[in-house]
Amino acid sequence: MLFAAGLGTRLRPLTDHMPKALVPVGGRPLLDITSSKLREAGTTEMVINVHHFANQIVDYVSTHEMGMDVRISDESEQLLDTGGGLKKALSMFSSDDHSPILIHNVDILSNADLAAFYESNQDVDVALMVSSRQTQRYLLFDDSMRMVGWTNIATGEIRSPFGSIDVSKCHKYAFSGIHVVNPSIAKLMEEWPEKFPIMDFYIKNCAQMTIRGVHNSNLRLLDVGKQDTLTAAEEFLQTI
Image: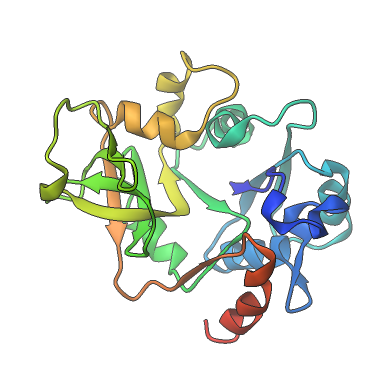
């Protein structure tokens, strides 16, 4: 699944007239760059959620050879956030195929081996690709790399279903925007509203589900989220 419904507010004024997914980097839309990487990793079926300038993405998909079966999860009437977007889209995957689903943000560029990440994480409910980048918000993992909570180091806020946890004894990593989920999580999502962030769902349910953090010290990743990252993104693409 490709998350492409966001408003892309940090990329304005470019996103005042196009969706973030079609913002060009090195002459290619982010949608083309990311979907090509997914196709090269073996993807044969992809769901793209759309909201902001949704028709432009639909038109792009219909007029370009994507090399895979592409379906559109239309959130034009209401942006459902990442959790609600996944909840809505789950029913669009092949009903006779219970394979895990690889999820990728459209604006993330990386040197990640997506095929290896997918194949090696078939045994858990959720696998999160994480990195050591500096941020204020970190996911917390125990020594086995099972997710146990979340913290904001700037405010001291800690969220965990495990009760009181010692953050100093946890491994702190940043989420990369790339994850693998087992479709069986749909059962836990039933009680959630139509719109919600996926990370809230993971934090609340990490005691009930096995959520694994996957860290690779060789991972290089760039979030194309702001205007000033576009030039860096072009240079980054030349090195991966």
